[in-house]
Image 1 (cartoon, helix red, strand yellow):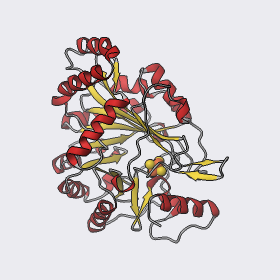
Image 2 (cartoon, rainbow, N blue to C red):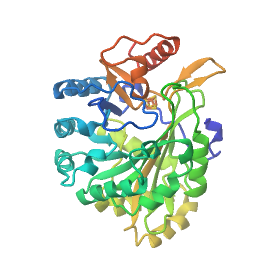
Image 3 (tube, helix red, strand yellow):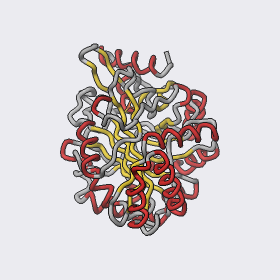
Length: 391
Ligand code: SF4
């Protein structure tokens, strides 16, 4: 998707985190997994890191970036025997801690032992990856999501849905948002457009289409976008932040201007960039009024919509603050014969001591293995590491 395809006059601007201020990194706790999702990008599936090795990676990531959030992922991180201690270690460093999991361990644990320990350790958000790429494991996705969401709700832990958008799942996000907004702790969707690890630059599902369907069905436009590494007008991530009324499904998108202002204020107050916004249910109403006021001030033409939503959401009681992020994997620019990744790769992990885009880490820098042969691997290696300031 190109910047010209965004609605003219919407005020949207690129979200370009400075290299050392990129506020997010991912840490791979283990490469083992309990299921095999269709088109998983993890090629190596046997390694489990020690707690000490993980802590060294966290500290290295902190040396390389001024982080606000770390997301733990795998493989499947809930299989790591010391996951609660890893969460506690991240929290001791005053960071937001998220876990990206397929949730299977939670489903099998009737007494919620692991979930309780993670909550106790201070996990901030659990991203539950349940989608049609697991239809060989889950017969009824809605039933599985609902069981997981009910568990999260009971434990009062924020959770989001993580999706790979396969061809058959195009245009479904609006319906999912409306369906699951009844859960107070559900705070949005992290979606990645599908890619085949064997043909890592093919792009069967388009960002343009998802953008159009969110505008048509939910009435929202993005608050910001992350450009490609070449800053060539291509969009790598679309970022939406908005309030949804859980009773009516009506949505109030955060304008690009309000989004920028909040980021700026956070940067001034906290001395680092903002990545995750997590609003507790007890503060949702206050936040809704604050953002509503801000939006009315920025654009008085929105006052009618804001007042309507205040009324329909029982004076903000049923308004939920949420996000949708849609990411595109690395791509190839045939005109200029070059590869593109996301600008400063906000999802970089530490791979063999280097900041590495997690989506291509096995392809360009395998764990404990020699660098792969082949032109594509070499070119992506060169691009990723020079873009991330590692070479
Ligand atoms: S390049 Fe980085 S930010 Fe983009 S999809 Fe890959 S890991 Fe995520």
